[in-house]
Length: 126
Image (cartoon, rainbow, N blue to C red; front, side, top):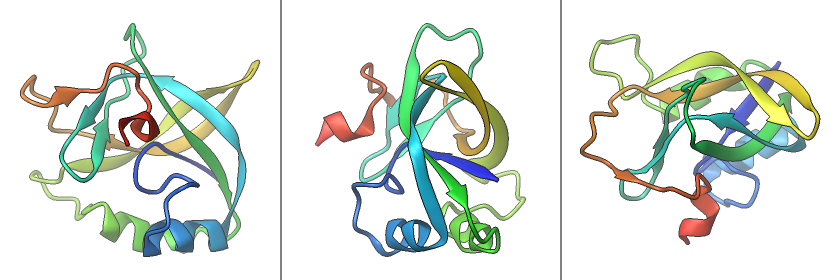
């Protein structure tokens, strides 16, 4: 299974969860999904919107051990509760000239009040 990450789990981050992901997965490349990327303070949130003029850029990892998803879900605050900020969803990611099926932590609380990062690349914020 592939996982598309666009924020603090990206390959260049050195927090414990990003390290865990690198240990349990193989970076297979970079790509984007149509959607919007928001600055939520010390982390981002991204939507998946098939018709969006914006792109969200990130890294695609192939998970070698899917049990790591439980820890990543906890990190993202997924509790299957109506107040969850994120949900893990299936999305098509554009990588070079191919579309790759991935899962992505989709931001659920976009209401127009968040700061849009028009570049779509959380790494360019820093």
